[in-house]
Image (cartoon, rainbow, N blue to C red; front, side, top):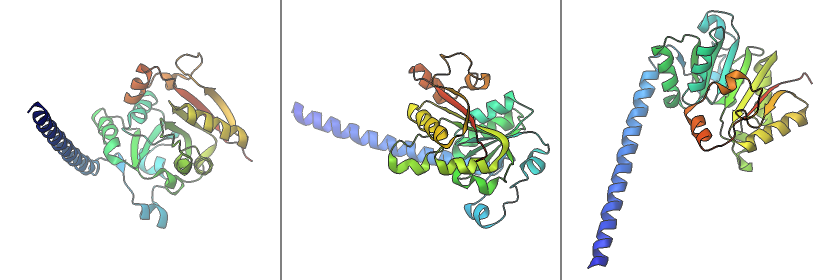
Length: 252
């Protein structure tokens, strides 16, 4: 009897777990839809379609400062911005610069967009699109600086094309950056750090600064250590080193 009671208990537990999983997924889907709808009402969120970017001359390409920010301040992008924490924090720290957080997942950066509105941070906006289309949204020499914070390292070889510092992405960044513009890569992935350093050195690019553990070694830029995302705090609690590279492209 004990054996059969145990089986019945396990079946009930499994049914309960399946039910709670379906319930959580349902609630999560509703929240996503709600956030998508709310994004449509935010004046700091832009959501062009792929067709609009690829098949037409996107109206904001080359006009972000004049049409959106209404000034001529340096333009800074955060690629794969997630919840938008870093973009919002940078905008709050550097009011003399313009920031755009870019991610394909609008339900994520909803939080950053909403926070910026609630806290009246007007120098940050969000753009929903795939990063591979970046040169369709920005003109040559339009951008002053790029941040890539904690990207998926895409470790498997077959995923190389999705790695945000592969040679094809670097070509796109170089195209939209001003001649003196630079790129920042901050990651907990030692693989991503080493891969990117090797690629840059092999291509003869200028590595301005590189650090394999920004919180243990002196000299790290203040904006690198003073801003921490939710996940970065978790990495630090696990004693994972946070790496950082700042580089620029040479004319070659």
